[in-house]
Length: 153
Image 1 (tube, rainbow, N blue to C red):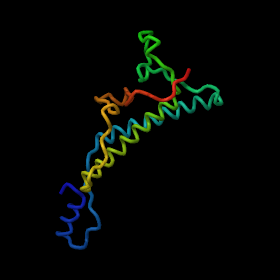
Image 2 (image 1 turned 90 degrees about the horizontal axis):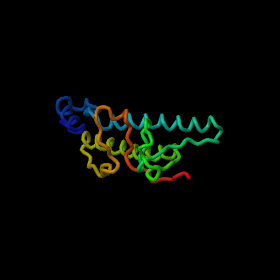
Image 3 (image 1 turned 90 degrees about the vertical axis):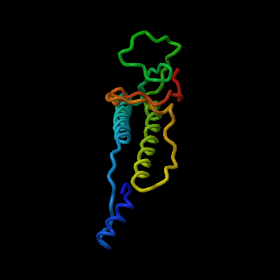
Image 4 (image 1 turned 120 degrees about the vertical axis):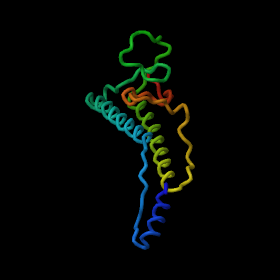
């Protein structure tokens, strides 16, 4: 009885015409993880927009990228200038948010497929979009893909 439909059929045999609905509960650690990451990213976007608004739009926050990924905060001059680029922080984070939203949709659909006998027609996020996660992964908040958006001069 691993699907909601089959569970309802089972209870309908025991209690005919008395069961309105039955739902199977599923643990969704991947979905929970991605939703938490998305919430943290939304908070970061709001802070970046707040920085811009505090300067009345004069200073847009920027982000240093090294090989398409955010430069570590405690970074020294280890990285050469040719490997670093400066991008608009809000735009970069919005692009990362779009990737996370697609991942959330995938894991939501995957959870529904398990509980409701649906065919999973959607492809999983590509390996370039996925990052291996350990127990402290949300704190690291590693980007899913190299940034290919607008570069500031």
